[in-house]
Structure formats: structure tokens, C-alpha cells
Image (cartoon, rainbow, N blue to C red):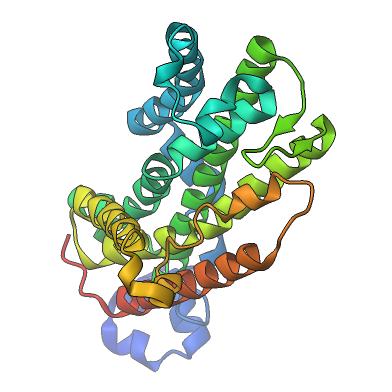
Length: 310
């Protein structure tokens, strides 16, 4: 570098006299002011975030428990099969009829608490965990645009949540297939659904459950943006889910119960029938999407204006 070039490179007055393009070149940035080669869409790529989340002990233990749960249920039925008084009727009474019935029972018993908790765990951990580790401000300083950071975190959480929602019935089906065989799915009303149709119904049930839990995802992500404690965000979303289910049991609320986010949580069971009623399924889908859109919008709006101090 010549003496003249060094003077231009270090003298603020000389730099100020340069054109925008020349000034950016001297400072190592492009004409737009960004560092040369910087692309926002290349920051925090999805596969990087997924690999990071899959390496966490929390994720590994959760998936391990989902694999173990169907085995525990099968053992419970074997141990208690000699005492019919332990049967409570409905899906529980029909669980050992076939593999599809066992999958339906697994989804039914886990739908009240476990499945909402899984979704809340992944989405409630999006921003709050980074804030609790004091790494959020460094992520934004890379820089990762705020909207991209939240979008990529939410997308990774959605992939992990859906994988968990697929893993549980898949393992349950394999356990049920070995233990009870590939028979018809028998409903509490006495209908018998053939094996291929039952498999298709279970697949649609998993898709519906995933859509119905969008409201939990949106709420957990909103709480994750509001507070810096991951357990607070996760627990808050789960608490709202439990509260909604409690209110659902109060028949005095009448038609107001249909506005509760969990009112249509088990409408997927309508798919296990010879004559499917799509009314509640459509209402449940619409309700979840509206709640999810509202909470998601609030999360993005809050995060773009929030002061990041950790």
C-alpha cells in the first residue's frame, strides 16, 4: 500500500470525500453499506439450527420417551388384562383389538397433556433460551435480521414438533402390529373400519392434530419473545391449554365453549368411522389457524421492537 493509499484509508476526512462505492470498498463493504458477500438469507440456515437442536439432551430425551411410551402402554395392558375391572370403556376398552386401535388409544391418552407440551417445549424455547444464555444479542450482531431469526427458529421448531407427532403413532403402530395384529379398527359405536382405510384415517388424524396444535405453537412463541425464561414460556402455554380443557368441562358455558382453543382438540376421532362428519374437523382447523395467526403476529411484532439486552 502506498503512502497516499494509506492516507486515504486512515484519514476520516479523505474517506468522507470518496464516492459511496469507493468508500464502501475502502471499508470492506458493498455499495449498499453491507459487508461484501453478506446475504441475510444465508444466516442461521435451517439445517444448522436443526442439527444444533437435535444435539441437545432435551430433544434426545423427549424423542426417547416417545419411543418408549407405546411399549409402556402395551406392557400395562398385558399386566392388567387379567382384571377387566381396570378397563374404562371406549378407546381404552378397544385398544387391544388391533394395531390401528392401539394407535388411536396412544393418541387419545397423550392428546390432553403430552402433545401440547411437546409443541410448547419446542416453540417456547425459540427465543427465551437464547436470551437466558445471553447469546441472543450476539446472534443479532452476526447480523441475523430479527424477522429471519424468529422465522428460522419457528420453522426448526415446527419440523421438530411434527417429527415428534409422527414418531409417536409410528412406534405405536409397530408395537400394536406385533402385539395385536393388523386387524380392523373398531370404534366405540361398533363400526368396523378396514385396515387400509384405518391407516389412512390415522395419517389424516396426525395431520389434523399437527394443525390443531398451531395455536399452542403461536402462544408459546409469543411468550418466548415476552420473557427470558424458557420454562416460563413453555409452562405458560401448557397452563393455558390445561385451563382451556378445564373450562371445556363446564357445560354451563354452552355454545361459548366452541371458542375455546381446545374445544375441537379430539375431533380427529371422527376420522375413525365408516361415515366421516367433517364439520367439527373444519371448525377445529379454522379455529387453530386463527389463534395461531394472532399469536404468531403478536410474536413477530413484539420481537421486531423489543430491546435486546441479553
